[in-house]
Length: 263
Ligand SMILES: [Zn+2]
Image 1: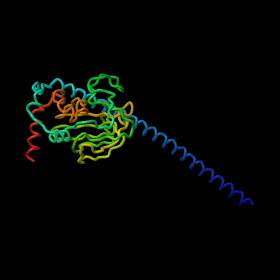
Image 2: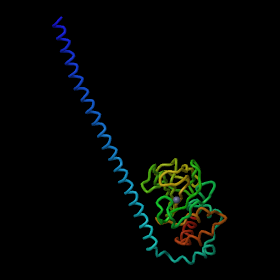
Image 3: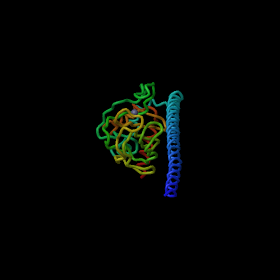
């Protein structure tokens, strides 16, 4: 009996020792995990701050670039643009060809401008910035169509510049168009699109304060007023030549017509 009782006491002692060691180890592991979690969270926060700083730097550089573009823009003497209608006779087929090559018409079925192109107080940063495109009213999931033939040169699900999900299409003769804050992209980089091709859906991604489509038009890498191009069609064909003066329209239209006739 005595031996059994000693053995039992010994067992209990061993059990207690193991229990203490294991218990201590578990406590240690918990503390370790919590410290690790804290470190990861603080690093995550740090990375977020660093990414935001970079985005702000990019935006600032972008603004400076745009200002510089404006300052350096000596431009071409295009005061003779009014004569284009007289100098270059265009038939319906010529016009159709030009309107399918150069961005024309709205990327949405229904066009309602909620913010114009030009300098404005940015709705999120509250600073004076050039609004490089126009904002078109569109509930999330509205179809976006390409305003001319072209090649997709950017299709991003995240853009560091704040455009969110976005697409850029390179069209003929130096034009590009950009679509920002989208919810869905239907095209990939390198894809050939036609005028009227469905390229994706509108959304509210990136630095956006509500569902809309941000639409930009560039010529020779410079921002231009997209509105004149949105309202450009067969009926309003000649208005663009007097409204958008940063292009040598006469030479461009003549070139397109000549090439088309050679076909
Ligand atoms: Zn915008």
